[in-house]
Image (cartoon, rainbow, N blue to C red; front, side):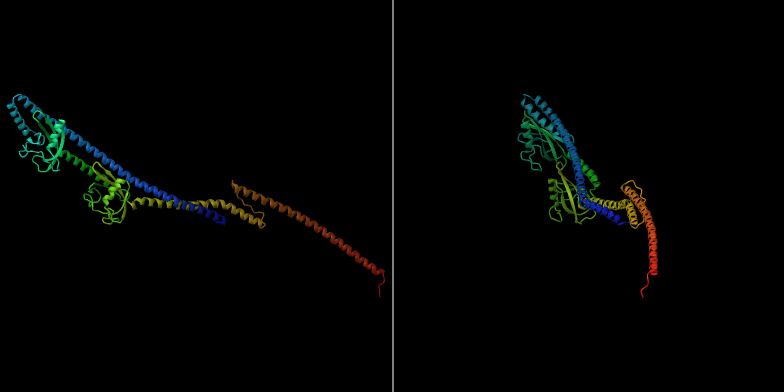
Length: 459
């Protein structure tokens, strides 16, 4: 019998053990692997986010370093230009020293010199008295004007802070917003003012820093363009992405052309109805992922997909940088890995069954031969032998079985010979006994004959 009952029992036991192991894997290993895989995907999303935030922080420091160095250079330039005017004032005052009439003329020449002084991009110098009246200014509309209460476009006083810092500290820097000569739009202006105590003047000059601001904005725009290109190549999961918005919820970078450049302060999360921008800011504050319903890039308007976003705040630019992934994508690799593990478990199950069947077959086959040989011996065939040659316990059992059957056959043969010998002896004795009995009977018959012959018969 090729497949014996013992073979079926052994293979069945192996299949049960393998099936239990596969079930144990399904119950313990697969959920564990799923948890680890999801955690790794989330860690990958957060790691990408941190790398981008660090990149933006480095760029911000670079831009701020440029701004600081440029402003310091401008401050040195202002101080140098002001020193030229200060030297001229000292020369005029020294020439008229001790002569009041000449000193008045010297003051007048100094004021006119300051009005005609130009440098850079139509920049100029000015002189004010302690009451914040501009006694020298190139603009006829401002020359001689009282600036004690004049404010810039942001409501800050202009001249009084310049006079105050010069009188209190001897010199200093202030800033305000003003119209550059020849232009109608205000620009930020950095001013250096210095006290001239001999004539109770405060003189100084200023330079518009809009070119620095423009360069900063240009570099910032270059950073945005660079980030847009880099983030456009980043994919989290299957279709997750990164995006950037500012504190006013203006979308700076986003893969959707409809959202990029727009303000999404009025956009609400479809499921809860809460402003999504406030939720993202809260996620940046807590450091936790925000869960919400959103559409996919290829399915605009189909708000049916659960999404997770991790957000970090970059205070330098006041930007919020987000890394987002769709929940289905997050578990896609997990599902694929789970299916792969299931297939591996199934393959192991089949392979174990096949190898177990072969092994059990090799184990059971000699036992089956032994059992058939035992049945033949039971039926009286003492010539049968197992013929199994193995170097294991089954081989030892087979050799001992064959030896036992051989000895049993010898014993049976010896017993048969003895039985035949005793049978022959008994047959010979029986023949002799029959012959003796026959002789006895013949003697008895002869005696009766003699008796009848001697004794008379009764009539």
